Image (cartoon, rainbow, N blue to C red):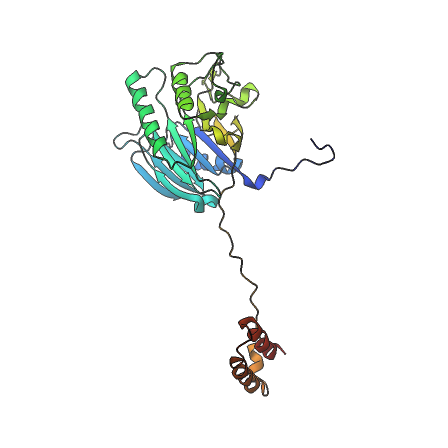
Length: 319
């Protein structure tokens, strides 16, 4: 390391704040407004939300956000979706309402586009068939994403990941729990098969910033909401932690993700500065006649370039 050289500062303009949050329900009156207030407070760009309990699938604007969700067509249960701050509206390339537990959002990047998959997995006590169906859907949706996209999968996996020896390096070692449950092993198997890193347990934080759910009586806490990303892009996620201060009447905490990716911006065309001419001068004296004669003279001068001709006529107008 060159001691005399100052370390280069990280360009925070390239950072994007993502989040995942099991909101438990957005069907309650005022719940969406409260959620939007919290997201604005924390400056979240894109939020994956689960258990919204809206029926059907829809896309609509709501204040500072664009809401896209996928729900159950017949009953107000489950549901997954995204809230995208309108500042990032131009980045949206597509939204796929897959099932009432999974949906995906594609955003434009400067070098790589990103597909974000929002999930709401069955609880631990559900039968194996339901869990198998969920992971079959997840794999199908993952494989449907464009090959060269960065894939980010986040949401409420209902999974507890432990610290058992021999786990793959991309699993992470800063989990809240000591033992992995059945849903946890399923999530790990998916991550290893798809060569993904589980970022939610890859950062060393205090216990309060690892907990994603706490029981109403405050006696039990778990880490069941997770984030994973393709291993080759694992360093794009700079931090993952729970925000206990965010409140939307849910027993889950918002999980904030600091995502480092050069997102696409609407670039300005690099054009030359236009020259403004004082056309009012044509009304004074013999300027109009002189201008007309100069134009006729220049049209007969073939060697001159267009820029030289324009400059010569401009002198007449601006003298």
